[in-house]
Image (tube, rainbow, N blue to C red; front, top):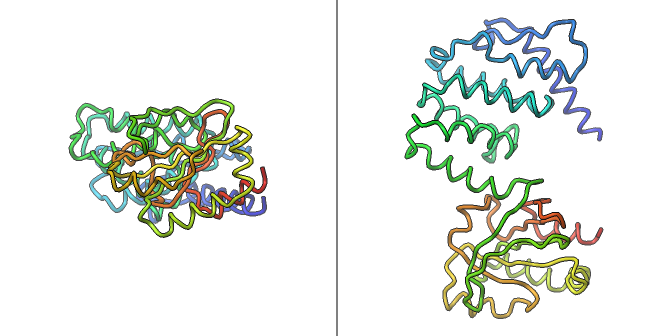
Length: 294
C-alpha cells in the first residue's frame, strides 16, 4: 500500500509539473489543468484527455525524438486516469492519424517501447493492445511493416490478465490433436516447458513433489496442462512419457503465435475458476507460494 501511495504522488507531481511547463522544455504546450478542477482523478483525466488538443499532428512528427518524448509524457499519467478516459483519448489520437500510416507505425513502435518491452516504464498489455487495435485496423497501413505488432496483438488478445484465456490447440503425447478450453469451476496451471531443458526438469520435479498441488488435482479443483512450444516429434513423445498421468501434456510449434511467452521456459500461467487469466509469466517459486496459500 505504501508503494502505491508513493507511486500515486509521484505520478500526480509529474502531471502537475508537466501542465505548468512551457514550450522551452517540452515538445509543445502541454495541457494546463484548470485550477477549478480540484479532484485528483479529474485532473489526471483532463490532462490525458486534452494532451494533443493544441498539436498539429501533421507537422509534429518532423522530430521523432520530440514525438517520443511527448508520447512518453502522454502515456505515463494513464496509470492514474480513469479507464474510459484513457481509451477514449487513445481512440481520438489514433483517429486523427488515420491518413498518416507512417506516423501510425511509429506510434505502434513507441507503444511497444513504453508498454511492452523489457524496459517499458509503463508495463501494460491492456494499453499496448488499446493502441494496436485501431492502428492495425487502418487500411492505409502497410501490413508487412506491422507484422511484428500484429503478432503481439494476436498473442496478447488470448493472454491478458483478467481476460478469458480462450481455447488452446496442441497435439497430445498420444498423438491426438486437442482443442482445449478451460473448464469453468476448475482452476488451471499451464506449464510451458521443454523436456530437454534442465530448469524445466527441476521445475517439474518440484511440482510433482508438491503435496498441496496433488491434493488440489485429486479433488478436481485444479488441472495441469504442460505445453512445449515445439513440434510433437517421436523424441518429444518419448521424453514426456514420464510426466504425471494426471497432467494433460501437449506440443505445438505455433504456441507463441497466440500466447504471450515472453518469459521463456520454464514459466507458468494460472487460470482462475472463471476461465480468466489470473497470472502469467510465473516462476516455479511464485507458483508454489501461491499454492501454499490456497
